Amino acid sequence: MAASLILFWPGIVSYDAVGQYAQAMTGRYDDWHPPVMARLWSLFRPAEWRASPMLLLQMAGYWLGFGWVAQALSGWRRIAVLATALFPPLLGWQGVIVKDSHLMAAMLLATGLILRSRLRGSPMSLWQRIVVAILVGYALLVRANAVFAVIPFAVLAAVQGPLRVRHAVAVLGGIGLVLAVSPVINHGLLGAQDSGVQRTVPLYDLAGIAVRIDKPVAGLAPGSAQALVQSHCVKPLFWDPLGSRDQCMAAIHPLDRDTPGHLYRLLASTAVAHPFAYLAHRFAHFNSTERWLVGGHWPLAVPPSRTEPNRWDLPDPHDTAVLAWMAVAGILVGTPLCWPIVWTFAGAVGLRLCWRGQSVRESMARALFASAIVQEASFLAISISSDLRYHLWSMVAVMLGWLVTDRRGSKSLTVTTAVGALFIVATGTAARWVLPTAPANYADLIK
Image (cartoon, rainbow, N blue to C red; front, side, top):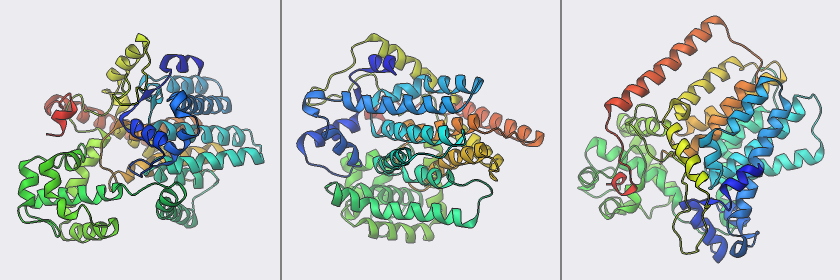
């Protein structure tokens, strides 16, 4: 941990985190990014200590979590845990101040505490339960879609033996409850103003349907579909053109002040009327964010090596070792090791293998696999960008699940898994040779 802190000190502040730092400095919060991280930042004298306390927190959670997981295991599994923690893209992103790194730290720390206790066969102490509850609560609030990873893990980690209907009800009910309560916490308890972020998913999907049926959907003006097509406003990669380019914003302007509830009702009715257009739009984005059948150098993957330019003069790490580390990470993010689809497939196989969860190891592995699979499945319906960092916890959860379980599949399952993995890697590699290479800079990406 000390070496990681020295390497990345005082922290690389991402574009998102610059905005959160500004909120911590001014005391004016909004919910474009969940405000709990900015509120936490405000407690650590941000004018003086800048980003360093946040780097310290996320690195401490990362290394303590991996350390406790390794302590709960033995032999080669411990070495594999250490190798995972040192994987350049993972550790590189952990040196970047961003909410995904805080989610990773909180979930790893909670996982480590639970595993260390359960694999030893000893009950968790009261203070451990309190710490885990705080970590789970923070993880739920620090990313808007973290609920799909956190709730399945929290529910299933407490279950040993076959899953019952009541467990599925608990997961679904917990997800629904958190989605309902989070805005109340963000706006009421944490004092964040409504930024309109809840409108982005339905606006993205309505625009995606409109360009595929080549006519305006309900609520959009005549000619809007043609404008969206001609200006290349809808991209599988992300929603950004709809929120940043004048022509695109004008096309969806009639809807951008509607309430989220009305927009989701409109989306539901439009998707029912045009199901193939909706599914084509969502699967195109899912393929993009899973980084499967995409062009070479698919963007939004490499951790930044410098702090985003800002008016607060937040400093950069000055060590050239950071540049070298991120250069290695930049190479590795293009390999199948950093394709979320590979880990989604591995997680699905692991979940199938450990579904009954007879032993403590199997039940804990099942909770980790379920956390990853439900999180990845949520991108089918609720996602507007293809950033690799959104998938980092899922990737780690799958890796830890395979290290924790002591169950081995049948020969037929092994063969099926090998064939499936080979198919995914072969088709993904072929796509990168055949499809156009993605633009290298943001300005070209949103055109």
